[in-house]
Image 1 (cartoon, rainbow, N blue to C red):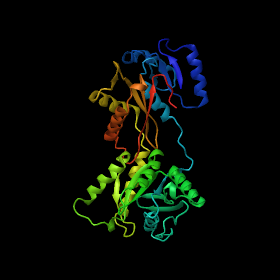
Image 2 (tube, rainbow, N blue to C red):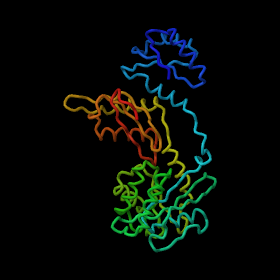
Image 3 (cartoon, rainbow, N blue to C red):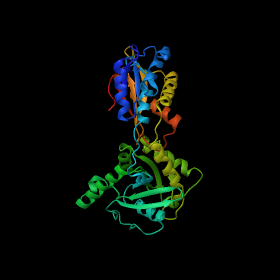
Image 4 (cartoon, helix red, strand yellow):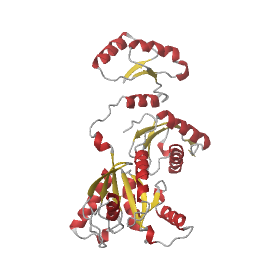
Length: 355
């Protein structure tokens, strides 16, 4: 990034620096600072085209104006990571849940063969097993994990190792299929396991297995959904599907859902679109006040993906209450979807660096 002073115009020093930068062959973002009258600087900025460095970006560092466009320009110049391109095409899917919930049975149904040992004895799967699978929907690596038991039941050192491998499998997954036993409903242990995937920022799909063993009526699915979301209130963004790994019921519907959640978890939104949504949200619900001081939100930008992480710049972090953060996150979900993925929001005061 080449930073110049718009009030001084193009100086001889600017020309010398521009010449050196062009010789370097590196991508350059030309920024003209002190454009405090942002809408009135168009004539002044034309002079900087003479440097031959492309479009100049007006900036007012004092008023935090123009930063979003500059960040987008810098990001656009990042080199694409060509390493492991083939591996990037594969969606890594970890099957997580309690022991004997049907994780290995689902893997075998997907693969069409008895690749993984299935047993009524809980804890048969000790290690995280990778299985590659490809169909018309895409390429996948399914990771069958050992079921995580309550700590009070984890006595053997080998089982402690299995739990550790499960947590590592969550870390390297793109999407986690959180499997729930329909005959038991959501348990405290389910909530703890799902919490691991949520905290890791992974895409999550709630998979209710053994649905063929449930007596049903018109309201069974909706009643079960409400119960799941009540007990896993922090996962209301996660889609839910009812399957039978034993009979194959609805298993084929998993692939499109996995693709969608993986895509949403890796979604990147431009700064201009983010701030349009932000301004609309602020117009509808004003930022909170405390003891006569009102929260001012200057702008928002996206810091990273997997999960989508947004950085909000404000005048005072103490005024940014959790309730308003939740409101903004709901606005982002309404506008961009972000189905099946947690959202992170980082609050920074003006002048504070984005880490």
